[in-house]
Image 1 (tube, rainbow, N blue to C red):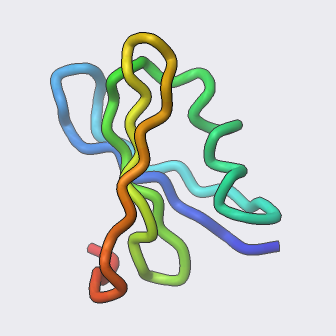
Image 2 (image 1 turned 90 degrees about the vertical axis):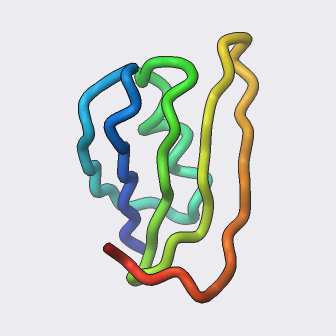
Length: 74
């Protein structure tokens, strides 16, 4: 099963943190994010590459931004 990492930055809504998890695919991130505060911005990483930026707005809608393949893990 692939490994993923969610990276939360300091954003005034919560502390910076990293959460590592395994899932069948990247959609497993939504299960991990279900209990997080709305409007937090998070980066989704796998195999040393950022694959998406995810934010849930205050109405509960998930906003996804894809990223270029040139991103490298911090």
